[in-house]
Amino acid sequence: MPELPEVETTLKAIKSFEKKVLNSISIHNPNLRWLVDNNINKKIAGKKIRQILRRAKYLIFDFNDYQLIVHLGMSGTLRIMFAKDNFFKNLIVASSDLKI
View 1 (cartoon, helix red, strand yellow):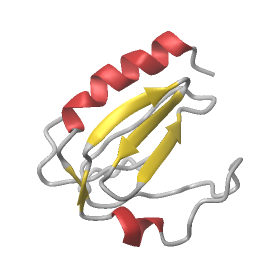
View 2 (cartoon, helix red, strand yellow; view 1 turned 180 degrees about the horizontal axis):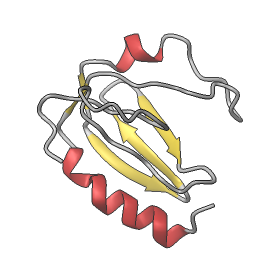
View 3 (cartoon, one colour; view 1 turned 45 degrees about the vertical axis):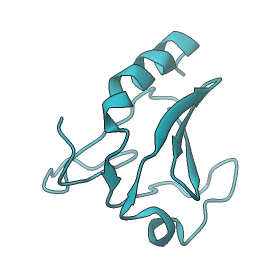
View 4 (cartoon, one colour; view 1 turned 90 degrees about the vertical axis):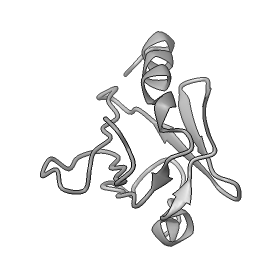
């Protein structure tokens, strides 16, 4: 499990995605501590990420009307990819205007 410095490093690495559009999100394990809304993709797909914050070991993707809370889990990784990539695990953020 990542420690706070690793979470902060991840936050700094993804800050450039602020103001970008999130096209889709995939939840590969809905059996989490809190229930994941079944309509999450409909609610945030196509929305611009207003701000990315950290609260303790959680990353918070802030949209105008919703917040997506992400924990890096046991692997300590967050993968951000283009839709054309064939390497899909963990959280998938795909957008044509993202520059990786």
